[in-house]
Image (cartoon, rainbow, N blue to C red; front, side, top):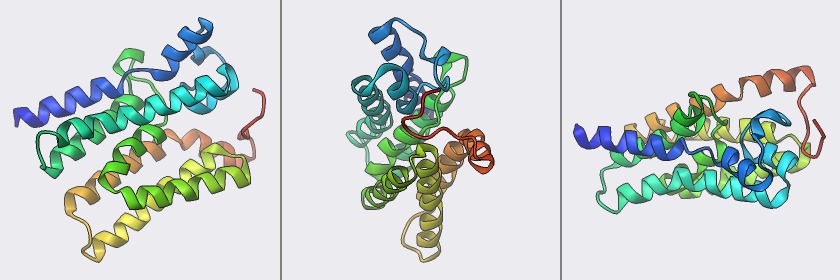
Amino acid sequence: MLTYIVVLVASYLLGSIPTGLLMGKAVRGIDIRRYGSGNTGATNALRVLGPKASAAVLVGDFFKGMLPVVAVAAFTDVEVLKILAALGALAGHNWSIYMGFRGGRGVATGLGGFILLSPWLATIIIALGVAVMVASRYVSLGSIIGTSLVMIVTALLFLLGNISSPHFTYVVIGTSMILFKHRGNLERLLKGREHKLGDQI
């Protein structure tokens, strides 16, 4: 039991590292939460800090989700421990202890862990999500559709007996955390008030 707690807490603390906030301080000496949408993710970093800083935030958030899973996998093949590592990092990103339990929306960090646990499905979802983003210019729409498809496809695979119960549970919890953080975006999309990629805020 102690091992499970250590993995969860360590992953949460790593995921809590506020990549976007740190990048804003490093690049322009600002708190990125005070500009644009107020989010610390790559999309707002693109608007406020530019493409290079945005790419760095995206990569940093992605690896926050991946590294805990890699670290656990180096010592054990226990699936539940890997899942706890991925979920801990995602929870840390979304509710960072370093930012008063506030944070991002979790797409990049979620993908970082998911791509190790379900590489082929993650690759397909990334491609579909990017296609929606490019066609609509709504980053949030691509994120919401991609995340929802992950849940739907995983549920079907679980019913067909192709994935384990822990893996299914992981996807349900992880996608729920991401969709919960997108509830504001969904409301704005429905009202036609969501900002498109490239819009100035």
